[in-house]
Length: 253
Image (cartoon, rainbow, N blue to C red; front, side, top):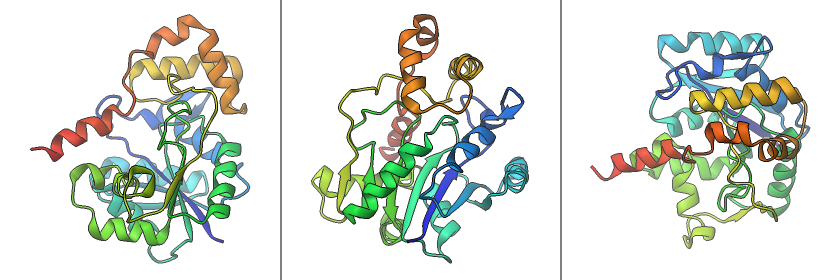
């Protein structure tokens, strides 16, 4: 079974421009992210999907340096970018990640891929019910589901965020276009931020990596975050999925 990770990356983030190029211990956040993905045993190939804007030439260069594939496409229609990145190879399963999550856990990726293979669903993810930390989001879907979404999705939010059309029309949400299930977690960690959207997030990431390095599992980082009030105070007031919420507002105009 061909399993392809696609992680989206660009320099044009509005809240923290060039965030994936920021460095901690001489490594860019993108490099940390890619190196951690490479440890996943169930992944056959990795693609960085970036934009066709000149500013993102650096992303393509880094993809070559990090020895992963790169596809360049639409800045705002990220669904189109994902589909065209893999339309020629038609992998059976696609893993969607985002590069502003440098500490993504390879063991968690493998765990969710194995379950997705076993269950044979159109969509399997740990975000239908958000119990994992922000920054440990893993979504897996079939190429067939991606292609259907690419053909049918019309809303700005569906195009910009890749998976809402699949998720919101799936069995977990009362829909009937796609079969789906959540990868659950008994303890709720959804108030932990291990992602980099804002300058405060980067300060948290620096503190954690300087103290714990880049090779621990997600729970080690999450527990450290919860145990250190001074770190937690830096970014605990940031809204999860703020970018998606803002895009939904565009749907209503």
